[in-house]
Amino acid sequence: MVRYLRPTAFSAAALVLLLATDTTAAPGGRPGLAGVAGRLSPAGWATAATAAAAAAAAAASTASTAARAAPPPAPTVLPDPGQARLAGVTRTVFTGSAFDACSAPPLDTMRAWRGASPYGAIGIYSSGGQRACAQPRLTADWVRQVRALGWRLVPIHAGRQAPCAPPPGRSRSADRPQLIDPAHAVQQGQAEAAEAVKGLRRIGIGQGAPVYLDLEAYPPGNAGCAKAVVDFTLGWTQALHTAGYFAGFYSSLDSSITDLAAAARAGAAPLPDAVWYAHWDDRASTDGGGVLGADQWARHRRAHQHHGTVQETHGGVGLEIDRDQLDTLVAR
Image 1 (cartoon, rainbow, N blue to C red):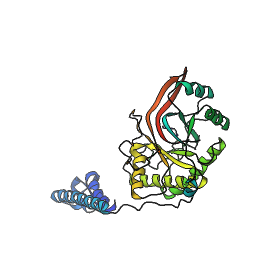
Image 2: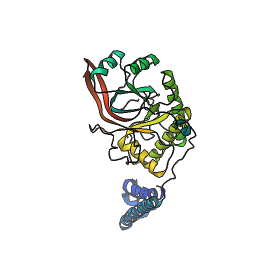
Image 3: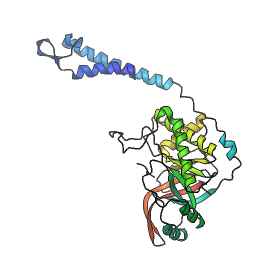
Image 4: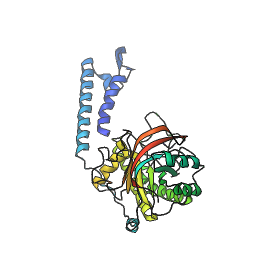
């Protein structure tokens, strides 16, 4: 669902680099180093290089040991006054096959697919500055008619992306996604939630519905990036609860879902009410893909996007979609 546009070690290593690369002429025409290294004898030169390399290795080992010994940062915990208000709200759950499409399909397509396809729910991009496709058909009237046909709706918000999202070697130019600022991640998540609520109201989806934050895959293993994503998601969840909506979260199983599951175990809060993970294994299952624990987002709070970008035809009408298996919250 790609729908959006150490200091000590450095000092020693720097000396090794200088020894290897400096071509300043030393007395006698020998390529040498300015300063101390330039005054060394050949034997001294080799000794200095060996010592510097050893120092770099020792410093790196020390830094690595210190990093392993350092305690993990405390989990972010935000107040969640809106959760109590949602406790008495009836949740609408859909269990079965669903699909999502970049742009809301024509009503004729929805009619043809309702009787002929295996699907009973559709993901719609209801808001977000990072939506890749225009939504000329996504209006309150479209929502009303699609609901009348019996479809369940899964609203999606495509907003800011992970701060480590740009692939290596590419600049953050104007056409790159807007990224989360780690220093303001909570506040930016809250702002995205406010935008999502406006989008839902604009198309006639009221309180008690979920909206799923679309946060695309990013390289795993970056602790700072993971914390920014989690804090952003906590702010998103808090603000949606305050507004009377359930918070959903969509992302790759290998990046954000893994990081969010770890944050949940550490005690971060408030967590999204439902998760929708992308793992293209062609398994129509919501078992968590080996990442989600049995106690995490269980009991009708999971969705799985198991196949992406496929052309299907039902009732004589073709459409490019992603395939999903749902057992989760949907809009009434």
